[in-house]
Image: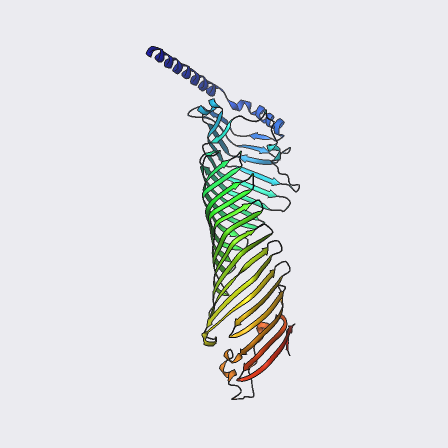
Length: 499
């Protein structure tokens, strides 16, 4: 029995050695470059594209079966215009899985790739012919499995002829781990994103662990880390980071993100900003999105002062056209050289993205101002009401009632036009003590009359187009009390009329 096993193993070894020697001899004597003309003709006949093979084709057997190619290019469909170009490419296969109908690519390496994807005005692309449906006889029985992929020093371009948008990925470098159905693999990407519409010039880096299933059209990205630096739109010195987890089902169009956090800093003109967005859970099913809570923390600095803003949206739901939130909460802390303001705003919210509309139907507003020139160095107020903003019509309407400036106030304000606003208002105040807000000299004017008076500086009102009515139950000014005061105000084209 031992001799039989010994001779069997010896015979198998001899056969394997002969097979390896045969393969090695074929690899040593076979020159694929002799078949360039046939390969080029085959591509022309099958794809109606022109293939150029300016570099050598090389085959290798050990330690893996592989093929490498030098400079090569492929033209557009039925055209001599270049579609894709490479400086070099190499593909190596694992030998053992081939015996069980498994195609496991040990490594794919591509260098100096340049490719242009074009979306035509009719909605088709310049690669549609490459992905025509195959018959059952043409489908490969092999399983898809790549141990790793490496792309370096490449450039990818996307052109949309309908919109004129053009995106370029320069200095594109990609390194991956295993790429196979159900197998997690590392992704390490670095590139420069450039575009003229919209204006973009960003250095982007991304790392993640991805898992996908082609049959079920599933994609999962864990530990996503994304960085971007550069210029976007009118924002300079942009530095943005994002991390979280993403799950996608392309068959049912279900997408979810959890533990998503985005931070960004930059400058817009002379104004600086520092913002952070947190979304613990965000779900998108087809065109409908939901989120338990979104929070935004932002710091703004510029000519108007320093602003710290905190925004929270609870029970957020909507679609690409509209949204609603059971509770919108906004806190503003504004600091200027001579005064400071704290504002708290809360309301259920609904909105429309397409028409740029925002409706705060049950608004609560609290304001506190501090400054040396304010009465008792502090003024506060609390009001309730509603606010509607319509960006498409450039209009704002608000209706508020409550305590403000030590008075009970009811106010209706409408603004039409954002470039040259026309402001209309209706204001009713139960009582107002103007002496608290006038300079002391003006308050003593009744006791020490003078022939000359300092006029009010109305330069700030010069460009305003406003009109409305003010009603005051009791007005105190210069120690005089006036009852049932009514003022009709009209201001237009540099003149102001008060009756």
